Amino acid sequence: MACCGSEVDLDSVPLIALNMNVRKKLGLYLNPRTAVASDWMAMAEAMGFTYLEIKNYEPSKNPTGTVLEEWQARCSDATVGKLVSILVEVERNDIVEDLRPLIGACTPELFDAFICYCQSDFEFVIEMIRELEQTKFKLKLCVFDRDVLPGSCVWTITSELIEKRCKRMVVVISDEYLKSDACDFQTKFALSLSPGAQKKRLIPVKYKSMKKPFPSILRFLTLCDYTRPCIQEWFWSRLAKALSLP
Image 1 (cartoon, rainbow, N blue to C red):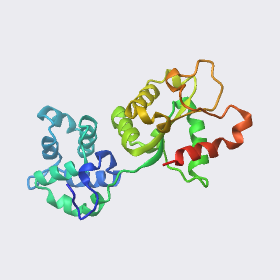
Image 2: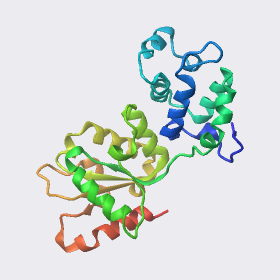
Image 3: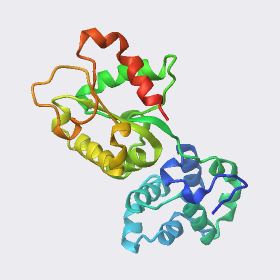
Image 4: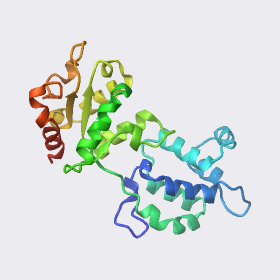
């Protein structure tokens, strides 16, 4: 469904791309209960939510936002285009028209790399941001704590980001990484996507010494090793070059 006078096919734009500004404006239209126009409850019903589910969302300060987050989490094919179709279905064409420029601009944000890390390694991730985003390299990294909106399904969002919106994934390896369920899921998911292109997709990085063995599922990949003093001078340029490849 191409709409809003835009070249963007909104049916191919995942709901996660709907920014906070648009979500807030939708709430301003749909949160108030009114007898003359469909509200958030009508939208939720059209999305397939049950009566009991809708009643449970009622105490929320922003039920529209809650419903959008829940729909995004439970419906793997929730798109901006489908949301527009639902608004038309519940006869809220006024919202579609008023938000036309904002909705039409909802193209997914793309990244050079998804950074897979555990919380104890976050300081190194901050350094990575400084060295790769804020220097001549001008790369765009997807860092979960910075770039993902709170209140969403972790597994759904990370899968979407890794598969469709990030060219590569940098895996920050440490002893703590080996104990992280989230890192384990992200790594295995990325490896499963394109077995024939694994060497291009994943880049393991080691920035401190480890007591535990290096993960066997990543042994076939070339390691970017920050712990070797002799190559630290080239570390960031090598990593940036690998992330900049087509």
